[in-house]
Each structure stands twice: as structure tokens, then as C-alpha cells.
Amino acid sequence: MLILLMFFLVVATILLLIVKRNRESVWLLGMCLSLAVNLTGVFTYIAKKGGISRELQEFFFLNGTIKTKIQYMLLTLDQLGYIIALGRYLFPLFLLLLAMKYSMIPWIRRNRWLNMAVLVCPVLSLVIYMPDVFKALTDKRVFVQQVIVDASLLWITIYVVLSFGLLIIEFFSITMKFCKKQFVQIIVFVFSLSILYLLYYRQDPAQIYKFYYDDFIWKNGIYYMNATLPVRAYVAIIVLNVVGCILGFASLLKYTQSNFVETKEEFMMQNKFDTASIGASVFVHSIKNQLLANRVINKRIMQLYENETLDTEKLKEYVELLSEHNETMLNRLDELYRSVKSNQLYLVPTKLEQIADCAVERFHSKYPDETVQIKLNTNAVVLADKTHLCEAVYNLLVNAQESVNATGRSGEVHLETHSERLYTVIEVRDNGTGMNKQVMKKMFEPFYSSKNSNYNWGMGLYYVRAIARGHFGSLRYESREGEGSSFYILLPKYKE
Image (cartoon, rainbow, N blue to C red; front, side, top):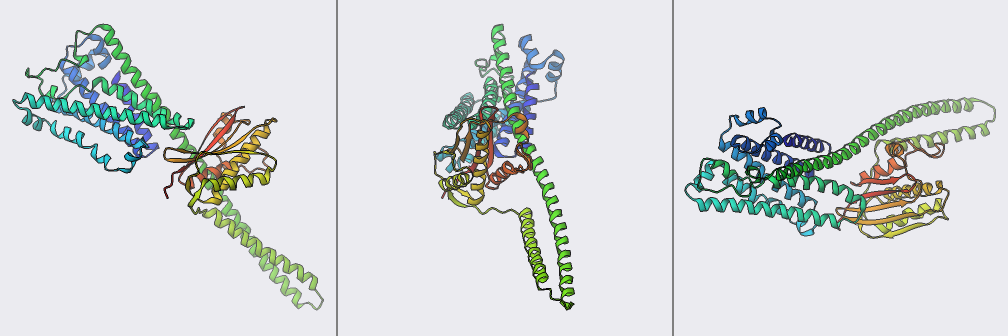
């Protein structure tokens, strides 16, 4: 049963790596794979050694047939011991690397050499525990063997404690609710996997290497090899295993699903916008050809009237005006085509206060009698295109005010800034109508609008999201129907 759950965890992590290709996903996959390798080695050793209760046999192997097949697999003790060593010593490494990646402690983030330093203990242990090396070092040296075993157990414990400490510190340092929600998913998954690891991590590879030797005591501390445990203890062990796997799998599945949905939506919206861009380009090209044809006709009319003896000054004036309009329209269409083809952002260091002031000023030009509650928790410098970012925040403020107005009661629009982990966050919040799930699924699509389409073309939120991504950031949101919405523009922190 446990092997099946581990299989699903590994599959879920691979999906996460495919959907979200970043270093955190690699470390998560490494944790799952190393735990699966470790447990596979432990279960194989249990099957070959025997001497456990029927309850644990059924839990580990489902039935006796599977246990028998595993028991008689062609696998030497040296190979089996090193399989356990690989899983045992790589899991705490990936766990600590992940915790360091998430940590915002300046000393850890500044010293990149720490990532190399944490490799020392696992790599050294894997070298020492190579069957030939281990036997050469410990042959008739029980004291050396004891030192190696105790040292490996010590550094594993230190790695796990440090990892838990860094993750807990990071969790309590997060101030924004929506950021905590995402981090909780990772915490639950990591802690669940770690519980499984800690249930079996005391299985030292030396025990397998010394299977036929009696010069070293291994019985104590390895509960699953102790046939004298009461039935309640077995039940507790089984519950811990199952709960740990289910929690880890559910948490990772939720995290993977949210990332997959976000990526899928982004792809679909980009595809729709690309289609719209192609249509706009074709439209511009067609209109341009028509105007060029009008230019030719205009020249012929000019030539015709130049050959006439009649006074056509007034008509000529109108024709010249038509020609001028023609040229203006051609120039405007060229500008539109260039804008559709390539929309560039020019990022420069800009203070958040400037962005806020600019956005609120534009907001008041449309709603002069309304108030925006401004709270700058940080006035950090961000790398931004002031014009576009200001327009994006303005769009969010207008949407918030329209949401408040739609309720028919007095409401509030808030503009706040935050400093959270790797991001500087601009938040626009209201207590308006909020959104239902159907609207939230479509609200970022280009040309979608739940408002009057005669006045609103539905490009506001798509534009805001595009601008956020153009600043190497993202746009996140929270909303409850009847309670209001919050939109967050996450921008990478900038160091002057």
C-alpha cells in the first residue's frame, strides 16, 4: 500500500516539474525519488529478512505472493545496502536545499557557496558507504564502524532540524494571507514526506552489509524489525504512514493543479490574443490597401480638375482635405500595426510612491468625487515602465470602484504596497460585488467583459496581467461573491 502511495507522489511531482520548471520543483522531485528509493530498499530488506507480523506484511506487500517475489529477487546484499544508502543520504540533502531556496534570510541568500557546502556530508557518506570502501574501512574495526554509523545519523538529524527550522521561520515571516496559503501547501507536503522518511531513516546500510555478522548490535531503534511490538503500535505506525502520504499527495496535487491551471489559462489567453492580433494585422493591411487605392483615385480627380477650365478652387480644397485625412489615417494605422506587432516596455528604477500617485491622479480624473484609501507599507524602488505600470494600477482602481458602485451602497477602495519575500507587492482591494467562479474563469480573457460591451471592450485585466508579466512579475487575485476582491501585482525586488 505504501509503495502505491509513493508511486502517486512521484507522478504528481513529475507533473509539477513539467508544468513549473524551476529549481524548487527539482528539489521536490529529488525528495520524492530519494524517499521512494529508500523505502523500496527497506521493504526489500524486510521481505528478505522476514520475522515480522502478518499485519505489517499485508501493509508493506499487500499479500504474501508479492512478498515472496520480492524475497527471491536476484539482488545482492551489497546492492541492496547501497540502494538504501542512496535514498537515506539524498533525501535530507534535497530537503535542506529546498528549505534554503525558500528562506529569505539575507546571510543564506548572499552566500551561494552554502549550496555546495551542504553537499559535503551526503557525498562523503555515499563514498564511504560504497560496499568495497565500507568493508575496507570497517574490517575488524568495530569502533570505526560505530563512528561512521553515529556520524551519518548525526548529520542527517542536523539537516532535517535545520530544514524544519528554516521553513517554520519563513512561514511565520510571511505577512500576506494569500502568500501564506500557497506556502502552506508546500509545508504540508514537505512535512508529510519528512514524517515518512523519519519513520524509516534509522535503517543503516551497514546493517545489510553485516547481515551475517553478530559483532554489531542493530536491534534497538528499528521498530519495524521488532516482532514483540503490540498490535496497537503496528496500527499507529500504519496510520502515520497512510496519513503522511495522503496529506503529502493531496497538498502536492493541489499545488500542481493550481500551477497547471494557471499555465493552461495563460496559454489559452495568449492563443486568443495572438489570433486577435493576426485579425487586427489583416484588418490594418486591408484598410491600408483601400486607403492607398483612395490615394490613387484622389490623384486622378486632381488631374481631372486641373485640365478643366472651370474654377474648381473650392472643390480642390475639399480634395486636398480628403488627401490630408488619407495620409493621417495611413500614419495612424501604421502606428497601430507597430503597436500590435511589438509592444515594448522600458524598465527603469521607479519608486512605488510615484506609481501610486500617478495611478490615483488618473483615477480622480474619471472619479473626482471618490476616495482611494492609500497605505504604503513600503516605498521601495522597483524596476518598472512607469507609464504602463501606472496604467495597470489605474485599471485595477477603476474596476474596484465600478465594483463598489454596482452594490448601490457606500464602499471602499484601497491601494496598498507590501514587501513580501522576493516580491514587492501592489494591492488593490475593494468591498464591492466580488466575482463568482464563472466570471473568475474568464476575466483575464481578451475581449471578455461582464459590463456593457458598448463602453467596455474587456481588455483591462488582460492588459494588467500582460504588464505584470512584462515586468517579470505576476498578477494574483482573491475574490468572494458579495464580499469584494483583492488584486495583487507581484514585482521582483530590485536592489539599487
